[in-house]
Length: 154
Image 1 (cartoon, rainbow, N blue to C red):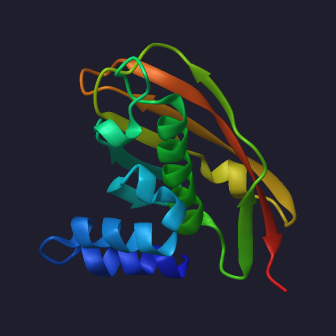
Image 2: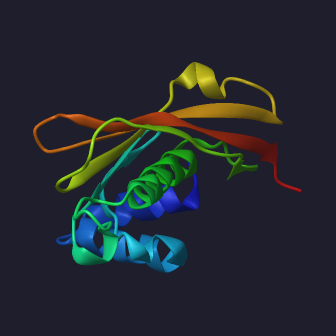
């Protein structure tokens, strides 16, 4: 259990905890401020963030920009990795492989998933984090893999 996950558990137990944690996550990882991910869930092997459609993340045709969704998926992957990585280990993304399935007219939920078997290895190793985004009605709009490299901290 990483320190980010411990912070998540403490903060979200309080009133307005998810909003506070989401703001703290954007502060810890400033790159994600552009998409303002709302942390919905953080747990070992599973994380969810929500990205609201707003002008700053729209493309020229008025839909949610593909890279904004990619940023949301990466934010979810990071939460999953922080909640799952063993103490004494660290992780870093190695790339991103996404399929954009349909135009995205509204808010999306960005999900990241792994299984315990994906992490049952001795460092260094790669974990392929499965990611997908969907609309409120359940329509899947993006799916893919974000491979991460897990090593021992020195």
